[in-house]
Figure 1 (cartoon, helix red, strand yellow):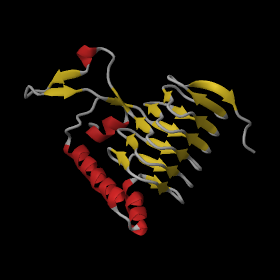
Figure 2: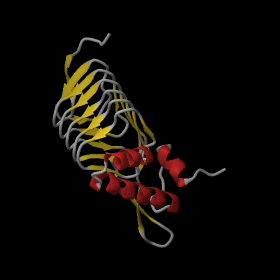
Figure 3: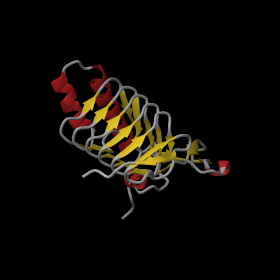
Amino acid sequence: MAMSEHEKLLAGQEYEYRDPELQQLIARGHRLIEDINTSSDQTKRQADMKELFGKVGKNLTINGQFGAVYGKHISVGDDVFINGNCYFQDSNLITIGNRVIIAPDTKFYCGEHSLDAAKRFVKRADGTPYLITYTKPISVGNDVWIGGNVTVIAGVHIGNNVIIGAGAVVVKDVPDNSVVGGVPAKIIKKLNALN
């Protein structure tokens, strides 16, 4: 049986982003995100967050404006705080653990394109250009503090008990009990393991 375009997306394969199922999921996400970003009714905001995300733990706070593509590919654990102007390009799964703080202007990007410019666009049968995108999941462990204006790239796993310094660009996995910073992010120091 052939994979759906949504299944191809989540498997990291080339997928057709104009697919009707994907477009419906995007429209659903945009509607719920608009409701979350404009509602002052906290009960409604919480209900919309639970509907938007794939999984929501206890005590999720989104402080200010929030953006995502699908929303349903995002899972968050307990006691997660997401500050304003964060963007989740969730063209694959983004998993956030427990007790995670995400500072303002942080971006998670699951999509990527070929390094070979000749392989970024092809023509469809009707002659229209087709952007080839591949995706990889992003995961964040427990007890993580991500500083402001951080960018996390596709395929990265951030371990437990980690601090990501403001302005960092995280392009590779971050081990447990680490402080990282810079562009690209590198280990600055080790932290004592949590008991």
